[in-house]
Amino acid sequence: MTSHVGRLYALALALLVFFLTWAVVAAHPWATSAKADPRIAALAAREQRIRHESVAVRRIVNRRWAVYRKQLHARQAQIAAAKQAQLASGPAPSVRVVTLPPLTITRTS
Amino acid sequence: MKDPTFWILARASGITAYVLLTLSVLAGLTVKSRPFGRAVRAATATDTHRFLSWLALGALAIHGVTLMLDRTIHIGLGGLLVPGLSGYRPIATALGVLASELAAIIIVSFPFRKRIGARTWRRLHWATYAIFAFATAHGLAAGTDSTHRWAMALYLGAVFAVAVATAWRVLTVTTKSKGDDRVPNRDRPVTV
Image (cartoon, rainbow over all chains, first blue to last red; front, side):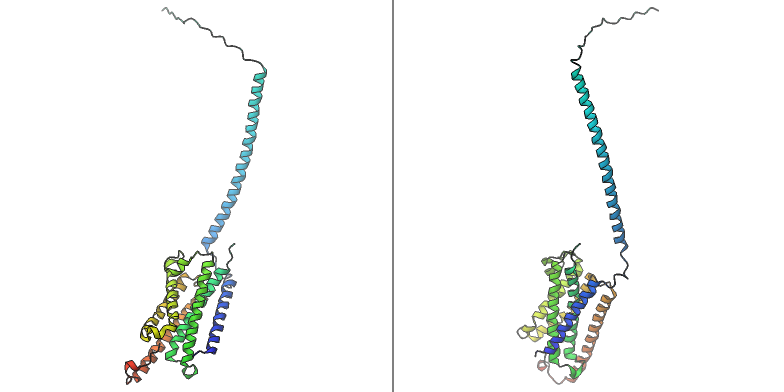
């Protein structure tokens, strides 16, 4: 036999339990009193520190790279100027090859 | 940041399913022991017991679907259907899967009671205690909120209520059966 009143009460109770639990789980009424997990806090601090370090390292690497590029350009310019000067001064003087006579050492005691 | 709606819904529906399962077990236990006397008719208690079971099954379905849709823990259809396949707390989740599958079998078997046979169906119904035990263990071990006092009070209260109702029923049935000794076993009405 179907009991409509009983079913109505059961359905109302089910809905009440569901929405009440939803509200309790979503609202976190215990969040202020509960202590945060120290491992999670340590992990978050470590992540923050590593982020800062990575930013600092990137800045240093960029600065050094800029200096290196600048020096490289200057050196390349020096080499190019030297080559230009060498070409402008004409051909290099010819080298005279001299064959010397064998060296003889005589000693008298 | 991930949207926690499905995660919250999964938790709320899981707890709701547990509450409804407990109420259904309690309603089933009161069918025969009748602690409220003539105030609640046996037919009303039986119908409420069945309806609560179906509601619990509905809440279980919502629990499973929202867990699949949620991205906090990755549980697929296989993890929901096969015990131990889920990567999230495998043993505790497996207990939940077992409990829900057994509950589904028993609840769906309500209309087929005559076809199955009252005796077989009653034996099958004994699995309700295992379902309740598995569901409690699943809630305590896998539940995100089980560490909170209100959740612990809920689980303890449920276990206490079912234990008291079971004891009440055992005592009542023992007392009644002593008075029914003249009635042959095969002629006794089958009640669960």
